[in-house]
Length: 349
Image 1 (cartoon, rainbow, N blue to C red):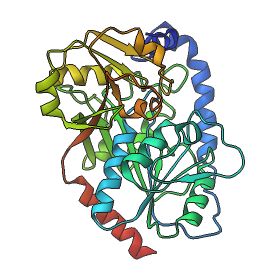
Image 2 (image 1 turned 45 degrees about the vertical axis):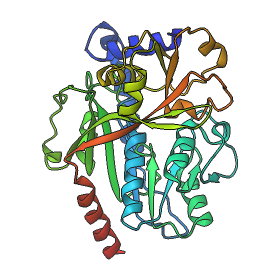
Image 3 (image 1 turned 180 degrees about the horizontal axis):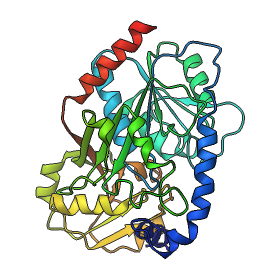
């Protein structure tokens, strides 16, 4: 595990309680809250066009809560219902100056960022990236006027961005110690959760819901668990159903690598699935895995996330398999209630 990954895990352990560190940093968090309050009084951007309904998928806790699978599941559902969705994102880790970048299908992660590249690849819908989400929205709608619903990946804190539906994604940490950065892991105060239309909590297998009081969201709280769907051989593109792959490979020595916000969740899922791991390699979120790193591992097979796979296309190690996951929602029919929201928004327009 890298030094940065160790530091990130240490921080999350500290943020899980109100210890000495959070006590010392609380004055800074108070200043951050005042800034957030001021920022939230600012109005939305005035647009020169009328955008389609916008669904914002975001989180208030740092460190990877599970937005990407939610965005992909939304795209899949909306497409099945006849919608033509598009996605806007920041393009984290990529320097974008000037115009927003718009693409579809197979994109270059070095130009769009790993998450937008994955979203474009797996959903097939148009994607636009820019640090200013309004510019990404404008470029997306100009380039693809056929789009009739926009999903904003991680746009919750971007006050200028208009939105019609807000979905907040959290994980088993809940609100942790309940404090705003830097004394805690929250980007906004915990009461922000009650202002969302939906709260989706990603849980590891057999994990229980966090004890987060949310009286205003009692009827729109969803749980999500990720489970292997199929495995894809990175070099050849061969795809095998997860159960079949496990029956053929469970006896082989295996290492898993993840450069995501919560890599332990990926490792735990694989072990619950029945895949014992000899090595767990946790890298910082968005880090670039290298061929040299894989070469150091002497296991028979190497498992990586789909998010990491978009950055590993040039690596020809035949041992690498990509684990594609599928979210399991409870209740499973919540998408239809969200669709009803969209219908009501469309009627108002």
